[in-house]
Length: 117
Image 1 (spheres, rainbow, N blue to C red):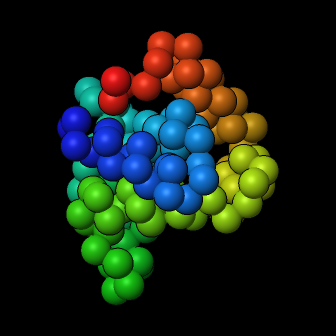
Image 2 (image 1 turned 90 degrees about the vertical axis):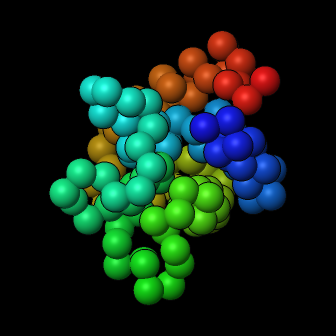
């Protein structure tokens, strides 16, 4: 987990995305009642964590690898400077509750300090 958190920090810097925001997106996309972040195929669905990327991208990237998944997810978040616009493109099911949850977690990450320290 520590190496993955470090990877989030590195990829966030590489693509110019706030790491607190990037981590919040991963948590919203992959958490469940038991864990904060899920890696690999998430349940019986068609998405891979930690960034909730659809399996149709397996032909292009090894999204079943958490490090590749993280880079692809963060790179997608970097498409637009405006976070709301990025999230609208990132998640087809975007709604205000999704946006508010990410912003809550981003604020918590900022307040508590990044877990990679």
